[in-house]
Length: 152
Image (cartoon, rainbow, N blue to C red):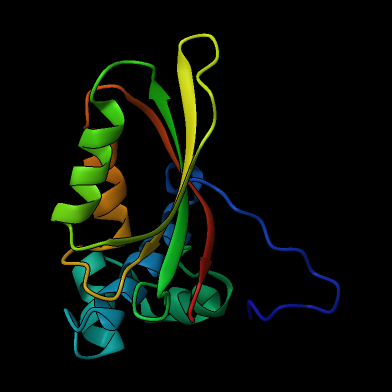
């Protein structure tokens, strides 16, 4: 069973390098959490996974973004030092329903600016991952990275 052993470490890895069984376990758990599957049986059928494999890995994998629990996130944006890039990123956050609690921008160096933004997610109309994709699509946004999250 995938129970955490005393002293066991956790690692953050990209989904594309996970073995198929572990990735499908994560997908099944996501279907259950979002109400898109009413039972474990239904979830594993939808993703093409056996119940025994699901039970083997379910306790050992969970998403970084627990949108149902996370109230605020802090994001690092690396922006091209071009007119309107920060404004467009802020408009993207606003359109998504995010409320900016804090913004800290460093001086642009070598053509890029580092900006950290704390966002209240309470009224957001999209999942955190969708927001990150929308921000990544803004011309001049070079990188989007989660640097913190909390549930207060």
